[in-house]
Length: 212
Image 1 (cartoon, rainbow, N blue to C red):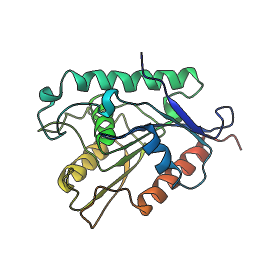
Image 2: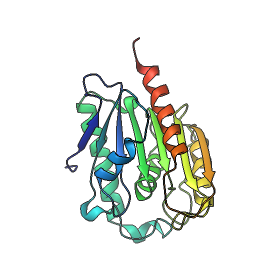
Image 3: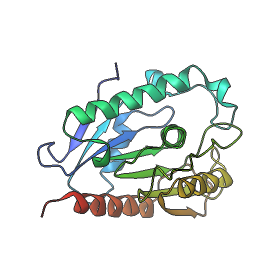
Image 4: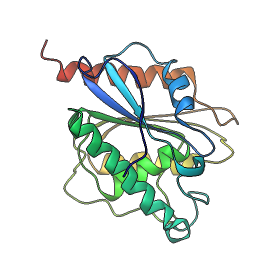
C-alpha cells in the first residue's frame, strides 16, 4: 500500500495533468507544496507521498545500489503504487508528470531509467541516477518525446555536476527531450529559473492534452 497522498492544486475533475511530487531527504510533502507555490499557474493537480522517516533510502545516492537496499526497491514500489493510484483517479501515465527534488529526484531518476515508460513529463531538481555505474538503458527509446527539465547547482554539496549531466545524457539516450541547466553556486536550492522552467513544461504538457 502506498502512503497517503497530500493533494493540492486544480480540482481533479478540471485538471489536465497530475504531478507526482517526491520530496528529498529530511523533507515532506509540505516542502513540495511550498515549492509548487513558486510555480506559475497551470491546470494540474499535485499529489505528494511522504517517505517513512522522511527518507527514501538510507545512504548517499552515490553509493553502490545494493548498499541502499532493501529500502530503494521498497521506495520504488511505493512510487509505482502511487502512479497506479493516480490512474484510478483518472490520470493514466501519459497524464502524469514526475517531479522530484534532491533524494526525490534521485529516486525518480532510478525508477525512470531502470524501467522507462512514457509519462507526460519529468522535472528533476538536483538529482541523478543511483549507484556507482549508470543503469543500462533499453534500446527501444521508451521515453521518446517525453519532455524533461533537469536543473542543479554547479557546486551543490550533495550532488556532483557530472552526475546530473550524465543522467541527462541517459534520459536523452532513452528518447526524452531534455532541457538541462546547471547554475553557478554552492547551495542546495531550487532557483526561480528552475521553477519557471517547470511551469513551462507543465503548461505545454497540459495544452497537448486539452481538448480545447
